[in-house]
Amino acid sequence: MYLKKTQKLPPKTLLSKGEVYTWGFGRGGRLGHPDFDIHSGQAAVITPRLVTSGLGARKVKAIAAAKHHTVVATEGGDVFTWGSNREGQLGYTSVDTQPTPRRVSSLRSKIVAVAAANKHTAVVSDSGEVFTWGCNKEGQLGYGTSNSASNYTPRLIEYLKGKVFVGVVAAKYHTIVLGADGEVFTWGHRLVTPRRVVIARNIKKMGNTQLKFHSKERLHVISIAAGMVHSWALTDDGALFYWVSSDPDLRCRQLYSLCGSAIVSVSSGKHWTAAVTATGSVYMWDGKKGKDEPPIAARLHGIKRATWVAVGETHLLIIGSLYHPVYPPSVVHSPQKLKEKVTCELDELEEDFMFNDMDADRILSTVQKDDVRCGSIPTLKSLCEKVAADFLVEPRNAMQLLEIADSLGAEDLRKHCEVFLQTVYFL
Image (cartoon, rainbow, N blue to C red; front, side):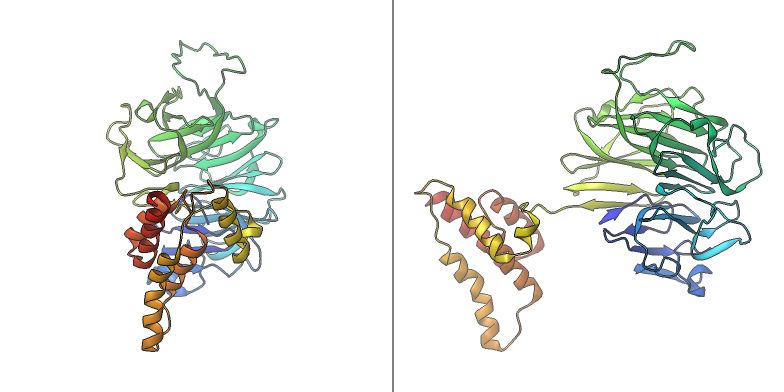
């Protein structure tokens, strides 16, 4: 499952098969559901609900949610938007609000990346071009002017011609794009023309001197995030760099408080930013307390094995993973092959390093026998524990599965892991 950036109220989730689910407060049509009571604000969607109207059978590959609207790009490169259109952020005219997905027909390019902010939208095409539309009061569209008139149709940013971009993010007053070469450009906050952000370690910029780097010394940025207070760049070696979003000099600094941790994901909301480390920990910090002071990161306790984070104005969503053995797809889809795979790997241990799993089978079968005597049907939980015990438990992961089973109250699996460990390591 893939989770994309969310903003104030309506979380959006994009499944790997291209379906979109939304939930939350849908006033103005931001959730994409046709029900009047939802887009009028009379009712909220409490649990994730599939967006079907307007998209048909199209698979969605990219999604972004802002305070008042949503934008998606399909597998075919089409862009659909819905929600409020008061500043032209939907990319078409004639409507103030659009309760269900509608295609932005004026876009002729195939779009692969999208970004949504409070009142403007930005996208990147498969050829690396950048298009923007919506409110331009702070120069956030990158046209070289801060004309207060909104732009209701997508327009190419001419200044960026000749460069290839692969990613884009946006906040209320500015936009950031990521180049295929790892360079970062930004505009907005009265900076009406795109400018490159110099991402480098221990750099002190003197006046207007142009900084030059040897190609081997340049840092390669792989991810970007835009917040109201701070903007962020994540390099391929896991380092985080930031600058004050409204700083006209774009003075970039490294976040030294996380230097000992390799970062794999970063996301910013209005004031808060969160980052996920390679070990699965999540750190957060508040930028509004002192935008000119180095952010102080604090770990979110109780969260382990996180892989991705998305931050909104008043909430955040985290994707986590449970450890399990990695097997080829052909093995995973065949329980018999999976069992053979585990058996084969165990056979590679020392010949006298054998174990007897009859005790474990006896433990797992106790509840099942009781079920049979009582004439009841085994629960889904007990069946899942049985499958995990039969096909997943092995020397390399038994201890981790024991911890997981204990935390989930899976007694049968926990006992199986205990017997397994005792048999393997103490006999």
